[in-house]
Image 1: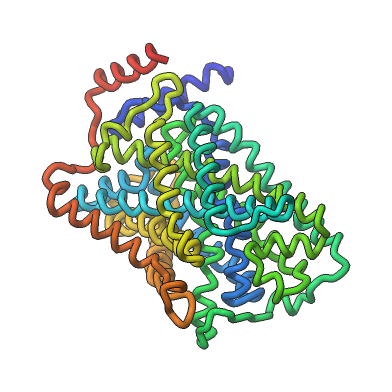
Image 2 (image 1 turned 30 degrees about the vertical axis):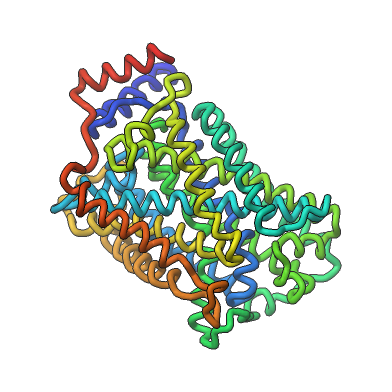
Length: 509
């Protein structure tokens, strides 16, 4: 059988499975397994997360936490990803996490689905805000070095708004363009890491010692407990390892989704773990003047310039900024697909509007712009609070990981009655799932704790407020209204009705 004959058969199987899950093939299924992996790998973006929070790591534990916190958190994240991937194989749909919760809950499936979806929505918006804010901060640093436009807060917010508009436009043109850019992004990240580490290994006249890189401890938080500071320092790595649920949200646009989606989740974590560790070690060896660089607005930018000079430092900054822009674009993509699916089931206020699909591009354009606008709103407190960015990253971690682990917890409760997909963990499912749930419970508490002492309005970690506001809104909305009408993921119709929806979209294309 030729490749041309095989492809339609697999496409038909994917569409058939989607029909069994209750949905029409409204989005265009053009993504390969590599492109699916590329979306999650791009959102994890080691050149974004590792470097935007590098200064936080320098203050909160220093080199020893930067170097050893990464592999530890990476392994724990892999447990979470493996558990998610197994569920993704059973339910390859754009709804992802909230859909899984509805199907796995033995009782009150609508409530489980509702709260999973709202935490996922919060985390997706926050991670988009964090990624594009990081890109804006680095871009502002480059512009400041080149043309003297300094990094005052409103300058960064203006750049953030511009970046979000560009990402909204790119995501409005269709999934083919996004998939192409994500494929390019994978190689940009890999080659970029090798380039940065290579230049930092060769160009500087001075390098830190191995004992400094692997054992030196720094505490500029104001807290006296090294254990507490070390735990806080894990945020650098844990924030970077977010967003890999994108592979699940893109399954309705991916070929061989029940296998490609889970592989995308797992491989994005594994490749990021290895490449990110190389990057962090390389940057830490290249530190020239720790006290000066830790005090810079963008410490990695200062490290680059001190290590390789002004011109070389700017070129390395360009490599990082382009990677961050790729990352933000992919985050808007994943966020919009979650919004599309959640509103398809009526869970968001104004769902009929947010669920609309552009018939020409077959993309949820309205959802794209909601994702971009929500990210900008969440970043605005930076205008008044200089540490607000760290709160945004904590919100992203908590929102996403709570949503990640609820389906895993429900899957553990099902035990042997869980219907596995073609990609599964076998007898390792329960121990891996147990570790994943335990780890998420720990970090959910940890990243709501204060990060600096003394606690003032300038240093207050407003993560807990954001989480409580969303939880309170979702809870009150549920009790007052949604519990009477939200039944979880809806079936769009019979097989004939689903086919009619698909035919109408094809005729309008």
